[in-house]
Image 1 (cartoon, helix red, strand yellow):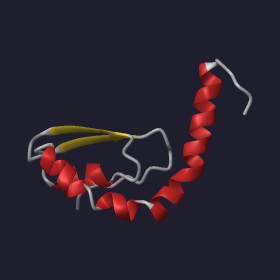
Image 2 (tube, one colour):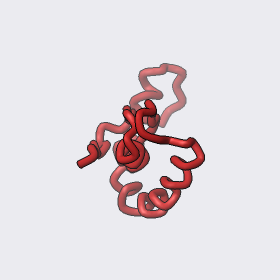
Image 3 (cartoon, one colour):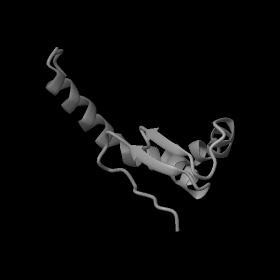
Length: 88
């Protein structure tokens, strides 16, 4: 990529990159990342009725686990290939 100071060019570069790697993340790193979710939610003392914003939610595993604890959750991610998990 040619160097540019144009924010739109940078955004497109980043978005294209994240779109390309999102499936690989799910396949290769999600299992490892999931192992940290309970400890992270415990450390943040996430409980029923709390409001949680999960920025860079990726496949949504943290957001889903927070929702399963009864929190009201919004998950945001740059990639459009985000899995939208909702509690059962």
